[in-house]
View 1 (cartoon, rainbow, N blue to C red):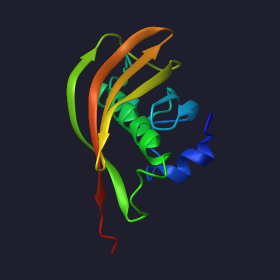
View 2: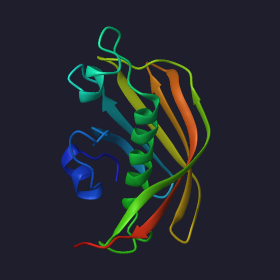
View 3: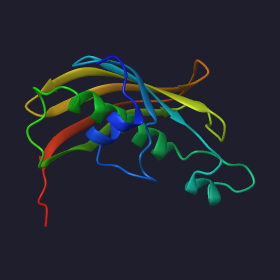
View 4: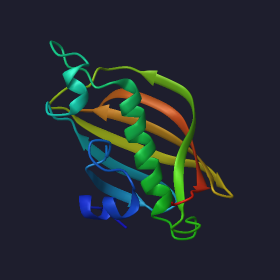
Length: 150
C-alpha cells in the first residue's frame, strides 16, 4: 500500500480526536517501513497549557505519533494482525532523543522502519523530523494484546 488517507488511517487505528496524531501516510512498504505526516496546528489542545506564550509540542506526543505510525505499519500487514479484538500497544522505548522543538505550523515527518518482528512483538527505529531536521528519534517496542470489550 503506497499511501493512506485519513479515512484509511481511521480503519486501522482506534485513536480519535484529540489523540489521533497521524494525518496521512505518504508511503508504506508493508512489513518494512512507513513514512507519515502529522500537521501541527495552533488549535491542538495541548498548546493551551504547553506553553501558551511559547507553544511547544510535548516530546511524549511526538513519540506517541511515532508509535501510531508504527501501529499503522504493523496493522497494514494482514499476516501480523491477529484479530479484530486486539490492539497494538506501545510497550517500550529505548534511545529516545529530542533534538528540535516542534510548534504550530510545523509538519512533522514520521519515518518508521521495522527492526524486527516476532510473534506479535515489533521493534521499530523511528525518527520524527521537520524540514529535514531531526526533532526526535527512538527505538519503539509494540505488541498485539487482546482486549476485552464490555
